[in-house]
Image (cartoon, rainbow, N blue to C red):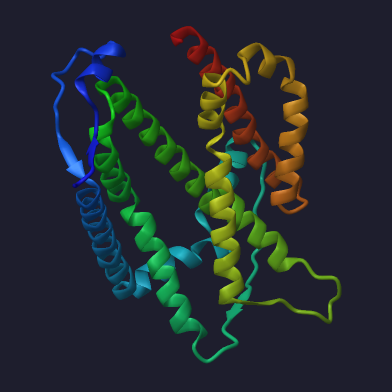
Amino acid sequence: MKRKYHLRNSRHRARTGSGNSQPTEQMMTFGEHLEVLRQMLLRILAVTLAITVVVFCFKDATWRLLLAPSQWDFVTYRWIEHLLQGLGVDFHFAEYHIQLIATDLSSQFMRHITTAFHLGLLGASPYILFELFRFVSPALYDNERRHSVAVAVVIYALFIVGVLMTYFVLFPISFRFLGNYSVSDQIHSTITIDSYIRTFTSLTLVMGLVFQLPIIAFFLAKMGLITSALLSRYRRHAFIVIMFVAAVITPPDLMTLILVSMPLYLLYEVSIRVVRWTAKTD
């Protein structure tokens, strides 16, 4: 006898008071659930591979974009110069040139493939979120579905902001400092392309996760573990922790420390307001 799995039953829907839609008695076997999951994974894989192939084929444009933060005249430096000049400060970044090398015979080709796949995942991420939501949405009530969409959009938006923060601020300034740092005039830096991409990827993931602070605060507030009063009381301590974290993930440069600490502290202030809003809506 086949064992049936209810997505939702009408008695449970009525007990929770979710009466804004008509209950359905859709029933699926465990094997049918697995088949739906398999088809979803195949669609995700197909879209990811398609974007990966496109990125791989547009090699020149892709690597021009990836290597841009390593240039001495990167757009961030020009923005900072224009900002300071608008404030009456005649400031210009010093020109520098750092050579990127490949030490293994196949390193450039393999790095091209892996980087194209990572960018394919990033490009397919909105579709992946859509497929995941479509898979779990039949098991959600209408209000849960609306909240899930809002949370997913915010999570993705914050991650993208973290990626942009890494690309335009954290990585170029870190590369400029670390690439030009030397313990002796007899030592010259030649950085491998593998080291370049690994550092870029790791910083991107770190910042993408750090920018999830408001979402983490939202769920902690839902569980009753934190309050807005608690976060406000420890605002000074949080500022010190943020400065310490920024100092760890950035080179020992005052400008970089400020550029990274400011948005992180802003996220903390946003988290306080998110927790306060959560308390009002509960």
